[in-house]
Length: 244
Image 1 (spheres, rainbow, N blue to C red):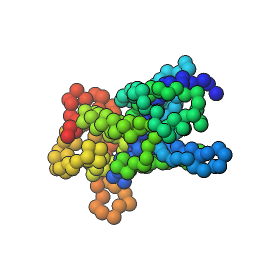
Image 2 (spheres, rainbow, N blue to C red):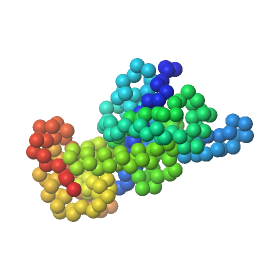
Image 3 (cartoon, rainbow, N blue to C red):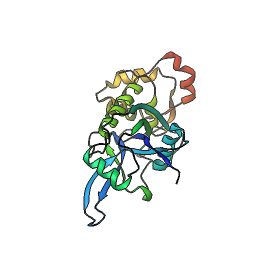
């Protein structure tokens, strides 16, 4: 195994969206007493790892993302660097380090990344049975400073969504306006007027209606759309973004 830098890590806050819920991907951290086998504590963390010596920090984040999701070339962007001197000094974090990774420094600097995936197509496999999707408003007990990390990643996502159409990273390739509106409402944490939303979307050349409708639904089938990144790149100077 390559040697890693004992005081530098990357942490990826991976958001997903399904069933009108914004989710975050977390991994269970459980420490057992080596003698009795008794569970000392259990909590959850975001996806992270220390940076290997000689490894580019963005490459380290991409490595973590691929290991946990199997995906490459999906949205991944730095949002903050966490460097507080006490971020790994809580009792259970110290216990975890001393029992599991005694070579790790007591002052770890972590570069936070925000990633977006369609959680309906990303289900943890058998090699990641301790990795689970949690609704953003139903988070379990978290290790280290990861509660703060997730909150800051959500603020980053909200601000980004107001200026760039990154929400489509969370939707399936084909979607309805209702699904799109639900995504914006969940992330921004507020209701949006349906008519006003539809009018704004109609002005956006990069949201393209298809000659098809929903299939297999009990209610009236809705128009289906796709997001065109190429069209967006050509027209983004128009600044027609859903700012709420």
